[in-house]
Image (tube, rainbow, N blue to C red; front, side, top):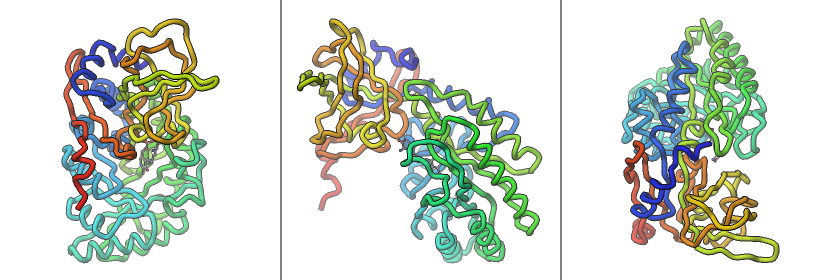
Length: 405
Ligand code: LLP
């Protein structure tokens, strides 16, 4: 389904010039998902804060910034990169379970829209940072709505007992405290129930609980401006984002007429379909019943299959040979867990042939590492039917040691 956006003829040129492995992103596909969100939520007119962690490359982020989106950042590093990519600070929100005092100060100095805090102690740290700077910190709390998003346990965050957020009871105590503080200004409330959430039901449930809570808070004199329902809308691997209309139906009605500004933090749903990981076949081999393709990309480039058992569809750029066979596609890293895909049906590729690993635009490069001292891959942005540019050069051996003393 995504193959039509990644033409083998263009990919061959890119690989010849930029080398492999290389992440290739399509600006038109990324923008298509961004605009689908805007259209689905048109009447509510929310602030979209792109979740930078999905893919923080400037070339891609700048596209979202130019569409008027803000950013959701979870570290000082992401904030730095968000500003550099052109996101306006007043459209940036700072989330994350353990922000340091230095990061909080940085966010306040930069003038972010608000900070999503996740514990009373963090709120105190924010208050102290604001006192040091002589300002009032715009505060939102991440609340754990105790909703099951029915996704992989590593990316499920909205059930009671998870490390994320605070309960409604605790949130109420913290808001009452913040309302009395000279250095805190409660402005919003937030939840993020998980990632790869494929049904709107859990959002409707969580949004209903959040709206009821915000109303109760107002009756106690604390009036919030923003309701932030996080990200997490799922994408079927190998496909485009499912129409976000269902998500819009689940949350917009809940906040209609409340005067609250709705905020969403999509990451994967906009970025995943927009990227492929392009890798070359190094070797073919058989071992017992298995056929292996050894590719030049590995788990350090794309860790999702090894970490979550994620299934990224793979195809050959150009035709293969002979009948279909079943392959495991593995990388050069010295671990049995190093695979890009298992049990893939393909015709036999030639040595040197290109493979496309789909749905790699999100949590691909951003989770990559230099494990096995492998320089990180290059990144390329396709901008038109035959045009593309390098948005991050391939790392060199010198980059591997650049920070060593
Ligand atoms: N907002 C917050 C507070 C988050 O923690 C996340 C993701 C998002 C928004 C964006 O969620 P998205 O729309 O991208 O699902 N590495 C995992 C995904 C981890 C997601 C963590 N939080 C993966 O590769 O599947």
